[in-house]
Length: 180
Length: 415
Image 1 (tube, rainbow over the protein chains, first blue to last red):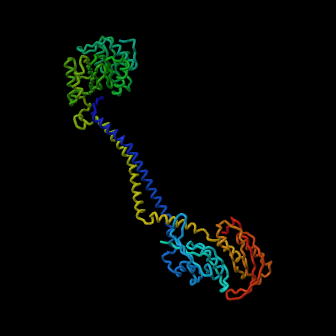
Image 2: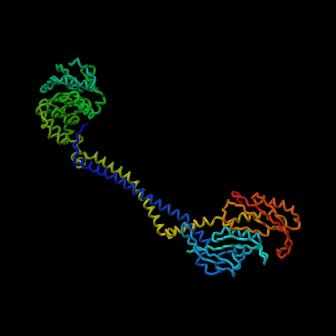
Image 3: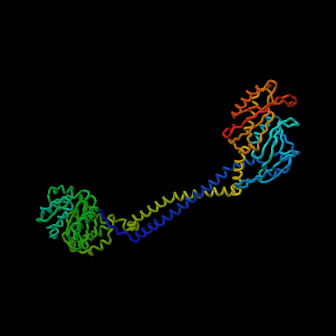
C-alpha cells in the first residue's frame, strides 16, 4: 500500500540536530574518558607497584629486627658483650679488658641505612676469644662469619700459651646496631 | 492495434504507450475507452475492450486469475509485466516513474499502478487521474496527480465491497472526492469493481489539493491521535535513540573501567598514606638496608676454605693427630671474593703420635689432605720438630710437621 508522509520537518530537523550534536559531542567525550581511564589505570598500577615493592623489601625490616640489636639498648660494656653473643657460640671473652674504640654511623654510597658501628678492642690488640677445641673454634668461626651484625677485619687462630686453649684473636671487631 | 510493436518488457510497453498517446481519444460519457490505453484485470474491462472498435488500444495487465479467465495472455496486445514489479507497488511506481522520465522526457504521462494493473494514459499538463482496479473482488481506487507534467502524488484506497461499510474518516474524505469526480462525470460508479476508468484531465491540481492536504495513512485510525501525529518522527526518533543507546553501551564499559581504576587507586592510596612504612624516608632506609644486607652477606673472609682444609687434615690423619695451629693472614684473604683465589701458602703444624714418627709415613697423609680438601693441590712438608704439649691435662711429646699448602687460583673455590 502506498502512503505519503508529510513528516514534521521541525521535529525531524530537531532530531537530526540533536543526533549530530550527540555524535559531535561523543568524540571528545570518548577521548576524555579514554584518556582519564588510561591515566587512572596507570596511576593505580604505579601505586600498586610501589606498594608491592615496599612490601617485598619489608623482609629487610624483619631481618634487622631479628639480627641487629637496638643501638639505644647498648649502654655499657655488658650490653656490648651480650650483643656480641659470643656465649651462644661457646666462646669465652674477658669483658673486663674490653674497651670501646669508636662509635660511628655506617654510611653507604646510596644513603643511610641507620646503622651504627661500635668497634671494640682489648689492650693486647684485637679481641681474644677462647674455644674448647680447634674443631669448636672453627665451627664457631663458620657461624660467626654468617652474622651480618659483626664486622671483622681479620683473625688469628692459635693455641693460647697460658691456658693451652685454642684462641681466636679478632682484629677490628665491630658490632653493628640499628639506630631506630 | 499496433502490430509493429510487440513489447515484452515494460520499456517496450512504455514505448507503445507513448506511441498511442500521441492521439489520445476517450469517450468517457459512454463509459468506454474509445482510443488510447486502457488496462484491465477484470472481465468488465475485457468487455469494454471487446466492445470497442478502437485500433490504438493496448490492454495492459499482469498475470492474474481474471486475466486468465479472459484469455488475454495469448493476445499479442497483451503485455505481461514481470511479477517482481507487480508485487511491490511502491517500487514499481518509483521504477516506472524513473523509467518514464527517461523514455518520455517531459511528456505528461500518468501511470496508474497497483499490484495488478499498470495503466498508462496521457493527460494534460495539470491533471488528476482516478482509477479503479478490481483485485479479488475488492475495489482499489487510485489517485494520481500530475502537476506541470510531473507525477506529484499517489493515493490509494482499498474499499472492500460496499464502500460505506469501510467509510472511515479518511475514506469518507476520499469518497467525497470521488463524488465530486462523479458529479463531473455522470458515468461513474466507484462501488463497482473495476468498471470505471476516468480521465479527469480537465481537472487542475488545485481541485484536489484540499483533499491531498488531509491525506493520511491508509489505516487512518491512528492519524488523528497525538501518537499518530508523532508517527513521521518515529524513524529518526528510533535512529536517534538507537544511536544514543549505542553510544551509552560503548561508553559504559569505559566508564566502568575508569571507576574500577579509580576505586583501586583510592584503596591503594589509603593503604599507602595510612602506613608509616610507606613513608618516603622509611622506604629509602629500607632500600639502603637491603643493599647493606646484600653486601654483608658476602663472606667476610675465606673461612669456609680454611675450615674445609682443616677438616680435611683432621680427617686424613689417624689416631690422635690433630692440627694444632693454623695462621692465615685473613686481611690478605679478605681482599678476595669467592672464586678469586690467589697463591697463598699456609703453614700447618701437625702433631704426630708414635705410630707416625718416620718422615716417609706422613706422605700418604699429605696425599689424602690434598685430595680430601677438594683443592687437589700440592701439600708438602718442610721439616719437623718435637715439642711437649699439654692437652686435656696430659703432657705429651708431639712431632710437629710443617706443611705447606698451595691454595689454588681462581675458579677452585671450595664448596
